[in-house]
Image (cartoon, rainbow, N blue to C red; front, side, top):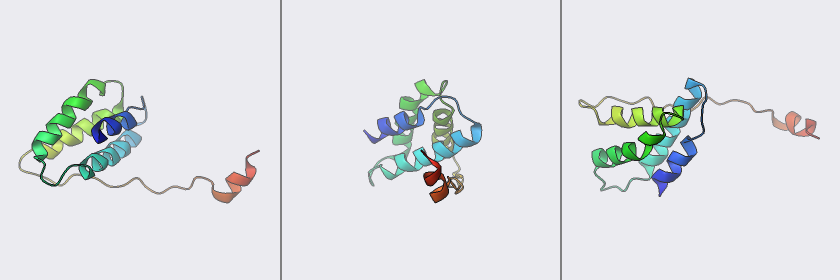
Length: 100
């Protein structure tokens, strides 16, 4: 269930590559956090990849998510770049007051 939700959240259509990578990292962490403790990681990752792969052509975030899944199963293991998106201001109180 969480996998389907993650895929739906990542299936947002075309976007800049940097934003797609940010969303894919967050989706990967969401998916990873939802795995049971005793789960076979490699099997779960390949299942997630198989579920997401049909959507990768139209959604760069899903393509990046699939790439993370494949990269995470390679041997020898290497650390993944799972940095969170940079904080940014969205207007604050001034923007809220300016809205009609």
